[in-house]
Amino acid sequence: MSLTSRSWLDNRSWTAVYTASNRLLVATTPTGRQSRQFFNERAQMVEACPGDLLPIRRGFDSAGRVTSVVQGEGSAAPHEHACLTALMAS
Image 1 (cartoon, rainbow, N blue to C red):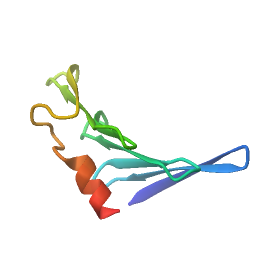
Image 2 (spheres, rainbow, N blue to C red; image 1 turned 180 degrees about the horizontal axis):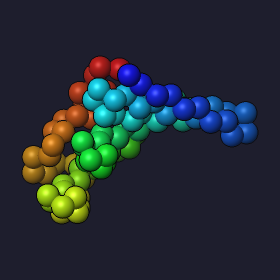
Image 3 (spheres, rainbow, N blue to C red; image 1 turned 60 degrees about the vertical axis):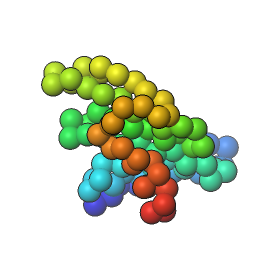
Image 4 (cartoon, helix red, strand yellow; image 1 turned 135 degrees about the vertical axis):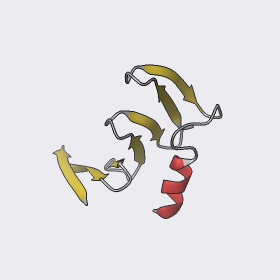
C-alpha cells in the first residue's frame, strides 16, 4: 500500500510517495532529484538518503531517544545499505 502526495509551486510539481510495506518515503523535486527516508516501526526516521549525498543514519534507545547520528560509513544501522538497495530497485 502506498500514499502519494503532489504539491505545486510556481507551476512545478513536487511529489512524495510513502510505501507502507518497507516504510519508505521518496520525495521527488521538479527537476527529478530524489531523496529517500526509511522509518522504523515507531515512525522514527532511521535513515535518510538526501539526493547524491552520503546516507544519514540515526540510532535510538528503547525509550525512542536518538542515541547516534552517522553520515556515510559507520557502525551497523537498522537499514544498512537501505539507500543503495532502494536506488537499485527504482
